[in-house]
Length: 225
DNA sequence: TATGCGATCGTCT
DNA sequence: GACGATCGCATAC
Image (cartoon, rainbow, N blue to C red):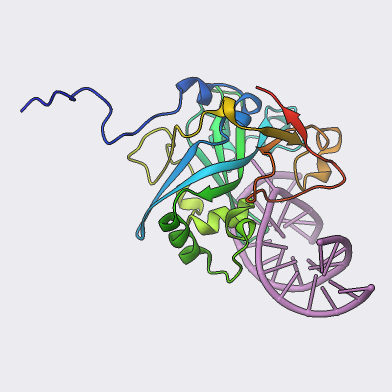
């Protein structure tokens, strides 16, 4: 009856450290790189590696939906404790996935901008949802709207608990972040954010084929944890 | 490869 | 009524 492994983690699920979800978006952004995003769909499970993120933290950040303490039905989830997903519709036709971090009352979110499938089977399932001809890596899931298409993510997953493996979407420990070659640069498409537009709060794995945008005007700089 | 533009609608003013 | 944490297609070179 009592298995010798009872009490240990089941089915190999390796949670991310809880501190990652209570920290600020700026601290969490680079640390989410290399981690595993798991999505359960009717096509089966899709596992992917996080390649690129952006930090949107605090009420001072003019790039954030929560700038100035704007607390609406949409942004409410960001003001709660870290752990849930923040999914919203952009340009009327795409969805973006964020990981909410931080403590109650402090709006923090990390935008997931690119993922890569872990296996060929994962890639096959992502292509099923993505419905594109291109075989270029970045066309599959290099971009926040693209990865949501590829993982069948929409607003129904807003608020989904990313910390628990029973969710339809959750996070698992993946690569050792300290061994990754990380670079940073300005965030993408937030020209309206004035002095916050230039902050180097975009993080990605150096020279990775799934990176969404190669900004020649602002070459990325090495980033060390 | 680079640049320009239209699509499309929830959210907020 | 205006706009956006984007994408895919068209056109140009």
